[in-house]
Amino acid sequence: MGTRQGREPVRLTTPSVIASASEDLDRLENAMTMLKPDYRQVIVMAEIEGLSHQEIAATLGKSADATRMLLARAMAALSLAFGKV
Image 1 (tube, rainbow, N blue to C red):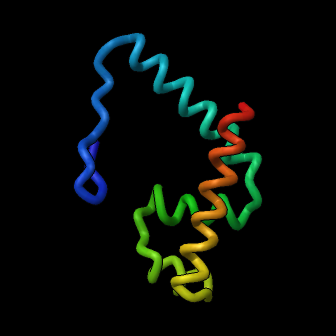
Image 2 (image 1 turned 180 degrees about the horizontal axis):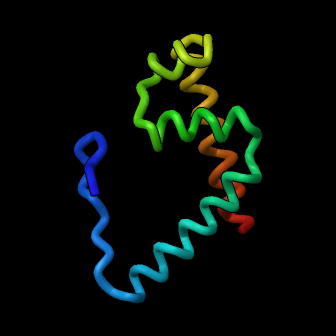
């Protein structure tokens, strides 16, 4: 596993850790499906693809400040959705 932005990779070493991570991943995937498409898109671009606000802004045709706000709203919505699944 690689690291992103200096973060250490997660080490899955025991069956209980693996099972817990799998359950969390399932919950996250379900929560992501509950989001508006633009929220899903900006989360994927920032958190999965590792794009900067400037890169996201250029891709979406928005300002960096607008993408920061969109990401903040998307993450808040994801947090709420994650709590519901």
